[in-house]
Every structure is written in structure tokens, then in C-alpha cells.
Length: 215
Image (tube, rainbow, N blue to C red; front, side, top):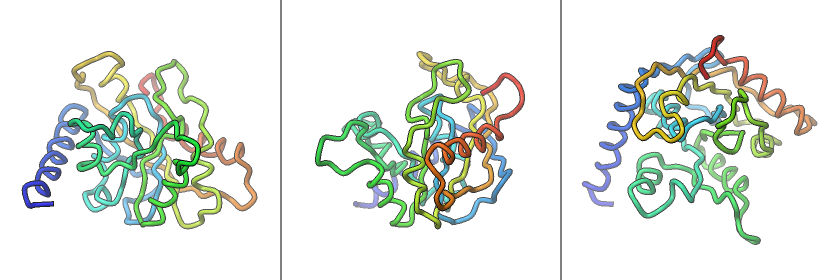
């Protein structure tokens, strides 16, 4: 990659983080852990296409460089501008939501990303929550990532108010204050079954939700 091509993603990254901070006034709250260069899966509630951008924005630069958002390849992996930003700026871990038989399973691919030393931003609901429910049921992916991995920290992250900044069908964002709250890391316990782990992860995430109507 030549010098201009190396420089452009950095410029776009500065523009994205600056715009996110300007529109949302986003602030991080490290309630249960500190920003540290450990291998982590930041798992969060999911109500907007901008969710991973907000988490990515509030991470310190050194952590941001090693943290890859998990994103749908059909949305963030195309040949246009969005695909370029997904790959070159966010270094997204792009997954195929409907893999063909014989293709690598997305969870196996994500395990490989973790094994390389990267952290992930992950949404256990599996899709954006456009309902009135606080959280959708968690898919099995978070459990499958955590099972047998004693080294990776699984950190709950609550994103507050972004669904109001970017409501469904809205073209331009509405300036509102948002917050991103990081909770205490958790691990899969030996012998812990899927339902028990996912319930524990869900409760850890809900415990970070601010009191009041915002979500």
C-alpha cells in the first residue's frame, strides 16, 4: 500500500470519530474495568447501524487499533465506499451470515481473529433490535466464542440513546447525548451450559443500562 493509501484510512478514522463525538457527545464510563491492552470481546446491545462506531470511537487509540468490529459482509464488505470504510478504516471482521455448506463457520473465523491477538466488538442479539423489548434473545455465538477460552475477557457494554440519534428510516442523525458503559469482564465457567452462560451475560449487560426511558 503506497503512502497516500495508508494515510487516507487514518484521515477517515479521525473524521468518523470526530463526527461521532460532535453529534452524540459520547463519553465512556469504565465501570467494571479499565481500558487495557488485553484480548477482549466487547459485547453490546444493538439498536443502530452506528453501534460499533460509537464503541470504537470511545476506545483509546491504542485499543482501537487492535479492536475489530464484527460486521455483516453483505453490508460492510461491498466494493463501494461503505465496503472500503469497513475494511480499511474499521478493519471489520466481516462474516457471512448465511455461509454455504463447506465454508468456514463464522464463529471459527472469529476464534481465529482472537487467536491472532485482536479484540472484537460483538452483538449477541445477532441483529438490530427494532422492537420495544429492552434486548432480543441472545444467539448462541457469544457462548460458542467463550466456551473453552480462559484467556479472552468478555466485557459487557451498554450503548445508551443511540437509537434516538439514528432512528430507523432517518437519513440525518439527531444530536443527542449518548454514553457507552463498560462493565466487569466475565468468562465462561468450566462446565457452564449455554443457557446459563447467556443468561449471565444478559444480566451483566442489563445491569449497565441507565435508569430511565433512554435505551
